[in-house]
Length: 370
Image (cartoon, rainbow, N blue to C red; front, side, top):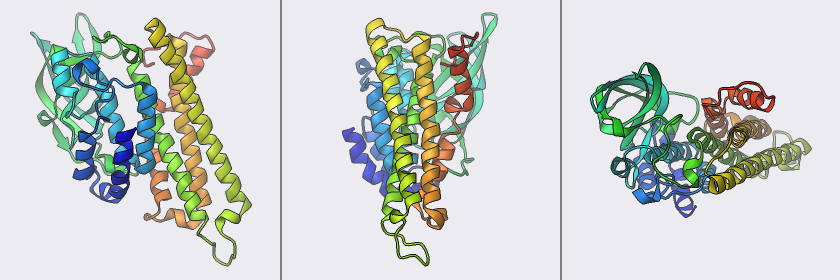
């Protein structure tokens, strides 16, 4: 939290430039890399922070209150660092411990073939957030071996990848989430991980948490921070703005007062469910060393609900801002675009609600993505 508090003012100050350049400014990227935030989920035995999910959520939310793009890059770096617990320890320290900054995409957009002690991988991955500032990247690849197919994260130095300038989008423009590509890259088997099936090489409650669940919580944290920022910005606008022909400020209008109250309740209740789900899961992870399906489902439900709630709260604030909110110079306009981009992530999509609903209804369900 101290690191997030230190970084937040710079992130806010550089937000316009990051958006124009479509990637974090060098100053913000360097400050993020120098902080303990990218390595907060890396095992302590490898030089990382090994912080709890609750601490991760709090730090990312604080950064998103300042700038959504900075928080998103921090989230990707932090959750990517979790892979350090699955690869060979020596490589995990080299690739993920400070001052390394990791990133990448687990979606299986690549193909890999086993060749002795290595995999030979080729693929192109969109949405590689922070790729221009990362030192370590990973790409998910479909591997055909032992008579079947599996998905493994291939981890390699960022310099091995080609970056294709593709990130021209609506929201989170400052994340630099370009496409990255490798061709016939040799990756040692010990530098890979199947997050859905491999057991982590490190003990501790953090590594009993599901990797995809932690990713979803990170997205929720960024979304909540964006929404809290939107409420703050609407309150500031409402106390100053007098609509044309009116002697009253926006703050003196009943519909705006109701919208602010509804947004506050929407965000606060979403935060409370996330906190409750994390507390229950952390207790199970620390006590039993395992989080059962019900707990994993609640984590995903809380994260998805929080992201959707944040989106609704930002929409309320954007509408309450009236004509002032539609200008590119308005912080509310950026918040509106950023939350719509964040909420499009597959980990918090409507399919997540269907997955949790099937479990609650007692239907046969593939829980691999939990």
